[in-house]
Image (cartoon, rainbow, N blue to C red; front, side, top):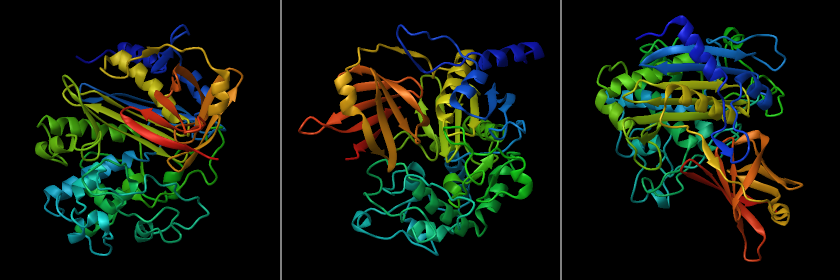
Length: 468
């Protein structure tokens, strides 16, 4: 039964006024917060949201301005970089080619590649890289992610990216562990997928994705590109650092299209959620069949199926992907069976924490089984311990900082949030963060000095080492 206009407006208002961190500290107020206030707190100029309910887009709203100077208000059709959500969309395109018989899901990808081959080494001696491995992040491929290129920099072609040759600013894409034996997130692997898709289809990647995914799903505001046209640039938000400053040249450019090159809107990505839901239910086959959709949403190694992060719940399966490029953070989340989901896009390095708070509000309003608020107990801080843990670290090849101020300890990393966040002692050398929800376990060397830490987010663990 459709909601009345007033009931829908009331529902949207409750979401806008019901933000909360996923973790609250016991004894500290867990009052609900407004979206407007949290945008100011995180210095996020723009937020765009599309809400899926009962298998359709129930509402889409846009908040803020394209840049921090506040001159141009955004609308639901304003473009954002989707960053790594590109991978999930690209995976759908790749699996479409598999169903067409143009790509093989299993078998050595070097038998399908033409202009470039995965370099053989000790890890590929007995086990070869397959498309299934690449889609699942279990091919043993390196290069976690890409930094993009400033407007003033020369943009490399895909082959230069794959071989790490100038002007590419990333390492050569290589196999560093036996394919199929472990999970390792790899943007480099999706660049191999991009080459596979273009060679198999004999089309450019943007043309292929427009024909196979965007057109059938009526995604009229989506494009894979490393350089927006002037007209599209006028309808796009600018990227921002955690301190609120705009990135020079508005945004970075990503020639690694399959991994990070999608410009789109939450409403267009909501059409992806709806089609996956319908295909999984056997009610649609605009891009993928029911059988292939089921395979896509089945975990192999790690938390991923073929392109999406997936989790089997009691009465449904969640499928999701986050995105984080320079100055952009985005989140796609959907459920099978129930026709529910949401897409949130922001234009700030601080957007991930804000996305979590919005999801917590949505989950409370729409009775989602996830994103429930957890209360944790903080134990008394140890000032001497805080001083020992304070310092510079390296996390996923990027700098991270732990700062001690009085009896408080803070964590800062552009990978998580450029805005520093307080970390609370839970037990021993284990600390927790309220936004975003994560845990930090500090580790000591044989002499008892702080040597690094493990960052736990979801079921993933990311090691960090201390910079001496």
